[in-house]
Length: 333
Image 1 (tube, helix red, strand yellow):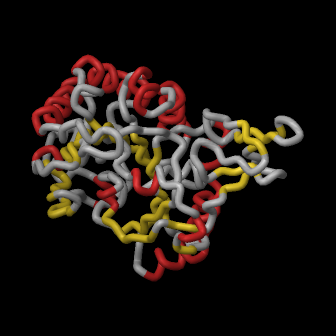
Image 2: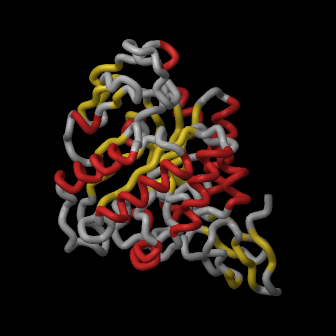
């Protein structure tokens, strides 16, 4: 599917994400890695990576997708959001020449995952939306070799291309940064409704396993009313069985003056989500045994106990069932 269209003799419009940048010959888009070459929009970071790393799948974070398995993580440069609080700003905001990075073809990425016994490959660190072709080619090849694929994304993608992409993605964590369009416009230079559209699509119309992350920033998106509205939207639109991770913010990029999110704030959000009816809620970037544990949604038995990103006890029966009441835990186990 073509990701661009000719706008005039010297201008081409990128159609991949809602920005739909109109670029003159030689110009790069907001993301910095999609460029008008004169004939088309090219992903100039294709085949270049900031590095390959083997992680526990819990680090993505994905708690209901092959727990304790290994995932090969990689990303490139650039991002199509402008988050002032970006935790990976050294690569997403970088204007470094992509050709100085490590070369890694889709074939090499898949071969590396296979060599080191990784269950899956994750497109992460920066948003796979901006290296769409690179991620998609890698995902197709991984599928052929029996390796799962994971996308860690902000979900800022036009629906037509989401349909193409998620057909090859086994699991996704979408970062729902806030439940306020004002927050998105002010802090991310984006629009909330476009992200909600993609979340609905992934949850309701694909086979991809979905989890959500909400990075809580004090006095920016920690209002009780906003958290309640977000949780109610999740239950009403995609159901209460979608895992939701409330994650602690650490000062970064252009929000260095903001404090680290307090444990109290995270636990309050956890309580709100629980009261509204979400079944699988977690806190991240803090150590808390209780709020890192997966519980049976029927009888509340602790099913998967974690210490940080480490699974220390997995009580699930085969097929992901609770050993006490035999209720299936939602996810891929």
